Structure formats: structure tokens, C-alpha cells
Length: 169
Image (cartoon, rainbow, N blue to C red; front, side):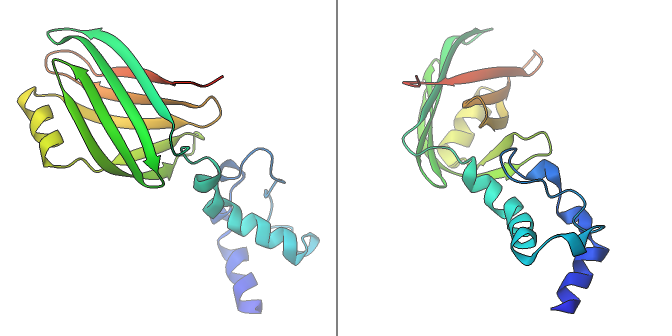
């Protein structure tokens, strides 16, 4: 047990207040003021960063959508449907037509947002390659419950699209 606590004193940077939700007790100063924390508080601080992605996870059944007019492509709808933990469906309606399931992984960022890493299948990658377009990034903002897709079409700078949750009150 002493070896475990010594490791905490050496590497307190792993426990940061930025990774803990704002409603949780502050974990700042864990390494420098360890004697003031009881074991329960210490355990809470250590496990908070592991719980953060689950606490802010995308809700199964949630649908996020945005319709825009893009150069060359015209009117295009982007939809992200969360099927369950780790599985989503990306749908593109318009000249780029796609309706494919995709596994995803949430990666917490220092900004408080969650990066959504999508693992596109071959048909999705082929469609995007035919249009020389890439989906550069997908983000989820749990505080305001919206998703952002950054697309990179040919010949124009990357475009950031805010997908609002459908049916949200």
C-alpha cells in the first residue's frame, strides 16, 4: 500500500482537475496534500478520470443531424445515430449517400469535449474517396449535447458542422 501511495506522490499529473466533471469534488493538490485526503476521497479522485467518458457518454438512441448546402455537392444532410455503447450509424443524405454502421470510441480531451473516433467500413471509405472528401474529426460536447463533424472536401478549407440533437427538449 505504501508503494502505491509513493507512486501517486511521484506522478500526481495523472490525476488532474480538468479530467474530473465539474460536479465532482476537486482533486487538485492530491500529490502535495495527500495526508489531508482520506482513502475514500483519494479513491474517488483516482477513478474519476476513468469514469469521465462513461458519465458524458453519448446516449443510446440519440440522433444528431445537420443539413447544409456545400459547394459542388449541394444540399447535404449529415446524421449521427447512436445505437448503443460503442456502435453508431452515420448517414449522409444528398449527392453523397451513405448509411453505414460504425464502431466508435470516446476519447476525452483537455478542453472537456469528447473526440469520437469512428472506424469506417470499406463502403464508407470508398464513397468518401470517390468524392475526395474526408471526415476529419467528430466531436461531442456533453455540456450542450451536440456533435460536431469536421469535413474536408476538395478545393475548399475544412468545414465544421454542428449537429443538433433531434427530439431534444
